[in-house]
Amino acid sequence: MHERILLINHLRKQFFVKPNLLKRGHLIDAVKDVSMTVYRGDILGIIGESGSGKTTLGEMILKLQAPTAGELIFDGIGMPFRKDVQIVMQQSNEVFDPLSSVEKILRTAIKRHHKLTKSEQDERIEALLSSVGMSPVDKIKKINQFSGGQLQRVCIARALAVEPKLLLLDEPVSALDVSVQGQIINLLMKLHAQQDLTYIIISHDLNVIKHMCNRIAVMKDGEMVELSDKETLFTAPKHAYTKQLIANFTL
Amino acid sequence: MAEALLALKAYRVSLKISDKYLEVIRGIDLKLAKGEVLGIIGESGSGKSVLLKTMLGLMDYDSYRVDSGTLLYEGESMLELPIKKRYQILGRSIAYIFQNPKQSLSQRKTIQYHFKEQFKVLGKPYDASYVKQLLSDVGIENQTTLLKQYPYQLSGGQGQRIALALALVAQPKVIIADEPTSAIDATLKLKMMKLLKQINEKYGTAMIIVTHDFDVIHHITQRVVVMYGGLVMNEGDTQALMKASVHPYTRGLITCAESLKDMSSTLYELSGYPLNPLNFKEACPFAERCERKTISCEAMVPIMETYRGERYRCCHPYLDANDGGLAHA
Image 1 (cartoon, chains in turn orange, cyan):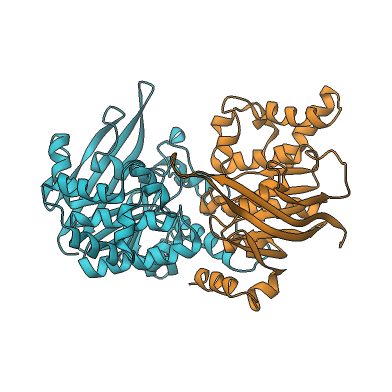
Image 2 (image 1 turned 90 degrees about the horizontal axis):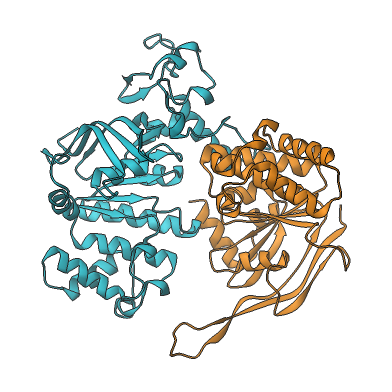
């Protein structure tokens, strides 16, 4: 259980901003000096208000952004990376080509990282669809025929197609309807229990975080102010900001 | 209910989708009393945005058709009026706050410009002290610096406040807020809700709040309308409805929202997905997802009935078995 999967060491990201053509630009710290360890099987939540740097941190974990300083060590060094870390995004309808079919999307992902024959690919596609609670008949459907909740299932299936070890969930349910949020959360929890997965969840919805995570990191202005177990964080928060966040949320 | 400020009767709207008309609002009755805060709750595809936008004439009028219905504002019929005339009446007394208010402002003009423009449209001279008072009402402290800023420099919460202050310039009788809290953080949500409540109390402005968030509904509205599949499925007093609604859909939604707050291991699931307007047919729109579904659900759209002041559209509501004996359970 306590095998380390990801080590984040003094990670820092600066962006160059130039607010005005005439003014001189300057550097701002989006993420300042964040260190944490993620263990195998963890569900780690990252909470914070908008502008706190949680998405930038997520992008660095995915290697979509190069850090300015610090290092990220994933499960030892020198592994083929994209096969191990995948993302499920918030607005899944904006991610896919609306006219491509589910089958095409999943097949592209499988072909990229696994050497399988055509029939093996077909089997894999059907297995993936049924694991996310969709019927195999749906595979010929185009992306623009799906509702938000179904699309989020496709997005999860796509992320799982390459058999990743770590899944980054960026606001996985906040764009969904209330009646569908429960379905997706249950699905994610089921997949976590069945497969050897580690989740990092970025969200500003404390209810979702509270339900899903076992460890929670709180970010404020690019700094990680607190990282502790769920129970500790909700019963005895250490940092004043965390206390305020929880108080605000529980009305 | 006293005289209604805004009353909508048997309202039906079709949207134009590549030369065909698709009915998305299928007969809606709505009433808003003076000073009342009404919540409209509905999932995607329920028609809540179309309802409000067509009512105010905010949608491109080639893209939809009002099939039937009347809209009365202070007893005056609105829908027959030409669109410009309707703007003159409704635009001054009804203010609309968009989901993402920062984007509805011009990025190249200062905040002050937007206020000045608002006064110009109303045909009044710019009143700086009034603007400052409005800004302090919505909880903005350093008003002078803020007026010189540009919309892109604002934070999400400030943007919401500015939109509210801009709406208040015209001293509207009704404020319609489309998802006022969905674009902002959970921490700001509380502040925004308090603010809307204060505005309602101070100015007596009636409000229609469209949302899918039960917290918002629960804290600031007096009456709530639940929409599904282009129909009003349930309507009643907010507290009573949240406590025990007779409608299976409202119950399902509330259980979903509540179970997320509990620490239960598996969340309550409402099976299926919200209905797409393409699949509307002459049946109860909620039939596919309903756990109390019977054969009669597929046969016709249930009629609106009343039970203890709560209006509902359902063939097998959760009524007390002793009361009316309608219950199957």
